[in-house]
Image (cartoon, rainbow, N blue to C red; front, side):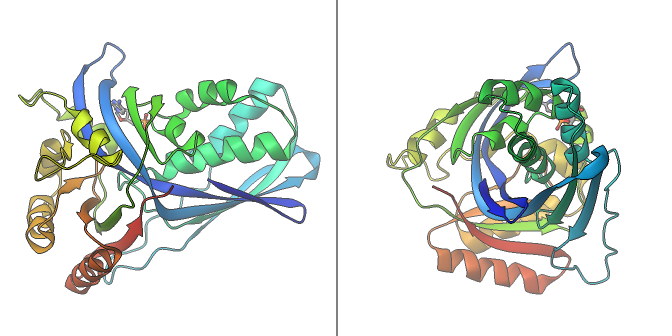
Length: 301
Ligand code: C5P
């Protein structure tokens, strides 16, 4: 997360994430699933601007800045109470018994329902941004407590760590070292996927968790496995919901010759590339196929 003052406002750029490993350990009594996942933050950002407003009004305006997909209508922008940014702001006010107001402007570059964590990242940025703007002085532990009630991925973005192993629902964060510069091509097909729907079709598989292969590799160890342990247990249920996802993953694997996976519950997929140039070439190749958005991005240090 990058934070800077802009006159009376606070500007925050907050990144997307990729899940290099995601194992579902089991269904819980509260309806959620226990996970073990390795998340990496990448250089695709939403931007938020927070400005104090008189009279306690809390407003959000959302502008989309995504490359269009020809023939596909733009998604409806949610700027009402359902938006996680407003929920985060209201939660802060309730918790601190504070009546301050803010004008929040959000520029969306991270697509919805993509598994790239945009909504969670925006919520984390709001907790951090308004904590500062309103001078609330909440510590990191308190912010983590609030983050966990907003969504399972929000905690990861709060700490701005480049890599973490996340457990529980995803909210228990263990930062890990990143000693490699990573390059990715991300491909997001036109239809998104609902996280809840994908989890609902998950059934236990046979593959044991082995996030250690990925974290060792990220920490600079040799890749002893052709795929570096890249894995996502939600790939199978996501493919059942999404026509074309299996083919997209297969094409990405064939064209890159590199490890490929779904991120989160999808529908975005990624390939780990050898160089920034390979990532750009692959992104351009998939962009010309139509029906999807593509990016070439790097990891963050
Ligand atoms: O936590 P978040 O609001 O992002 O989750 C959206 C939905 O995804 C949940 O309502 C739940 O159905 C599912 N989910 C899950 N297990 C997780 C995370 C999410 O079942 N660890």
